[in-house]
Image (cartoon, rainbow, N blue to C red; front, side, top):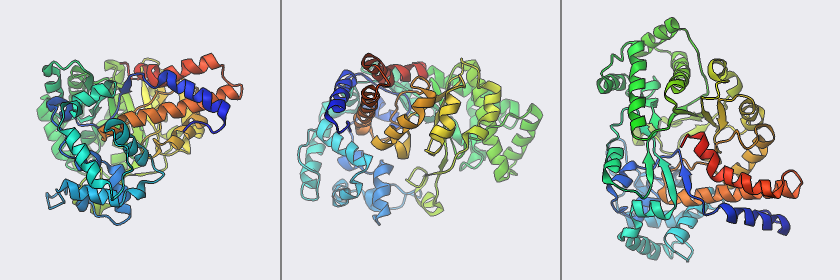
Length: 461
């Protein structure tokens, strides 16, 4: 991932050597806090690398491999393959489908660097590699906490629903483990999105948890304040919001109450649902002004694109597809209210690359409240990261970005993902030096910032 020409390549390698061993800060992700709480052995290679990883199984599904045969659980509890070795063999037979993708790099890196595997992963070597990884997983040094420390993770943030009891975080806190810090993130989609499955029941549960009347607008907002405070007690420094668009609203109290009445009464139109999500982003920004939580907006995913897969397998099964996003117009109500407040931190993530230079970089380049999150999901690849730096740096600079985070469920891919980002940044900085746009001493300083300092500052760690 370094430049091809020798002189720039040498500087890129030197820059990378100066940052490659810095601690990993992972301020947004989806690893399971239960892993760190119980510190139990991972069950088998298939359940570590295949079944939970939508990057992997969506590619195999695109070529006709049934999700059931990969052990992906069904929503109705119906039968799926449970034999880890059979799943592994099917994975090996179809591993060629990942050629040229980030997933291929991540899996290869984990095999080599985490498990010490030297041979190529093929159908012929699948059994031997399965046995080797299975043997490793029985050893204490491959338990979640030991790997956490080995990966040099300083902090990792998981993401929990507003309705979560955070019992695993409580267990981690009570365990006395000093090898790493695991914090939570407030994700209220289930009680913010009227189109979320079970929204009405979720509102009732939300009220029970907080002792508030969530059938009133004032009580509903109070419930969020109470839960945000609860999450902060367990280390949260951020909230996270996954919306189909970046739409925001700034309605009057009377207008918001009327909208909420339609929402809770089940009479909301799709326009009402979208307006409500938009209003709640502004309400979350207002709450962040009070409690200091960083506001993350992951906009632009058209989630659960296929209703048949949603019905059969549930959410997060690889059918979330990027869509066009209009940040300039959609964010204006929120920015009119809070965009110039430097004490507010809003981190924007994009799935529409056309917005990077046209909209996001100019917005982050002037509004004190805004920072740009790293390339996300379909674009956390070497090429996606490179395009991001090229598209946004000239307008937003480096210091209106938020460093890197891996946003992963695949635990063993964390070191690989961070190393890719460090290599891409080193290559980009070396190119700036070689073309006279950055001094070499500045490049070393920026490399440290992009890897470590910016992410800590952005997330108030």
